[in-house]
Structure formats: structure tokens, C-alpha cells
Length: 221
Image (cartoon, rainbow, N blue to C red; front, side, top):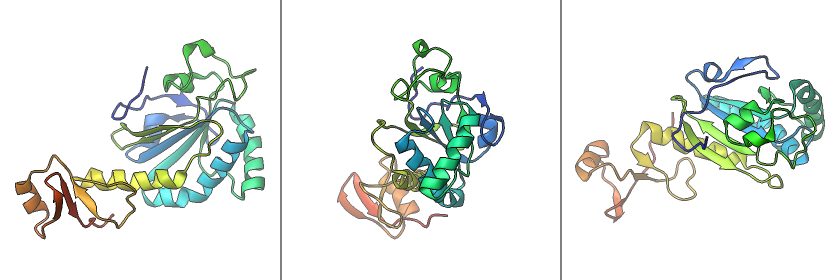
């Protein structure tokens, strides 16, 4: 199964470092981030998990739940967490899924069925495609999907920026331009007619072209 933006994020049950979960029930009505790792005790992933732990308060403010995944079992995750705390200054403060049967990795099309059903004996290189970030909305639909190579650390500040954009544009008929940061001007969505725009934005807008109508960003709440 190939996953795309606006597909329903597949549901699953799994063991995590904070107990068993049913994914959709765990998400509830919140936003969520699922980010995956090809193996425990890998260097780039160690830095990512530590940084995400430090950044978690910012996601909490936005009503976003964080959950990691690694193909190893959760007892290894617990040992890895100690290394993360020692080297990164923060221990994971969110659940990490154990996927030793590769079932979730395959459900999310990060590994083919030919990978089998056991993580034992597989190396990080074998699992190198298990390096995805999924942002999932309260409707359980995938809003963002990014795949990273093993040698490139993820930019979670960028993921936070995208969530600000997603949450803003979910509430308002707007789009955010290139390199947008919260507080910058935004673009009236192309689906909004000028008559509708006059009602929505009675203060008017700056029109660069008929299809590029700029207004100040509404307050993020």
C-alpha cells in the first residue's frame, strides 16, 4: 500500500515504551507525529530523539502528540534511552513503538513484504527506508509525509513550522508562502472568490496578481 497526503493513517496496535496502544485511540482528537527509525543505537537517530524530547513542550502547546518507532523491541529502546539522555541531555519523554515483527513498518510501506517478519539479524542498512515523518490531523488523515536518508538528520524545527501552517490553514481559507514563519503575511486561498474574500477580509488585501492576494496572518490560537 502506498500512502499519500490525505490518506487515512493506518491504524494498528503495538507495544511502546509507555505501554500498549491502539494508534487511532491513542491519537484521539489530537494532531500527531509518527517518526520512524531503522534500528536502535544508531547515531543520527540518537540525536533526533534527544532533540525531539527537548522540543516536545512546543508540540504540546499546539496539541500535537509525538510517537516514535524503531524496528527493535521495546526492551532495547529502554537501554537506548539511557544513551540518548547521556549524549543529548534529554531522554525521550514520549512513547516509542517496538516493531520487531516489522508489521507497522510494512503497514506504512516503509519496508516491503519481502523484508520478512522479524527484525532480528537485520541491520540499519537493511531497514534504511524506515526514516519517515508523518504528521496526522485530528481526522486521522496524513497531512505531511517526509522520507529522510540515514545520513541526514531531520529538521524538527521545520516540522513544527509546517504544523503551524497546517493548523492555521485548517481554520482559515488561507495558504502560507515560501519560507513562511508565524506572523508573516499569508495568501488568500485560490478557492476563495473575490466576493467571498471581501466578506472574510473587509480590510482588503494586496494583490500582486489576481491569484496572489496577500493579507496579514490571523492570530494563531
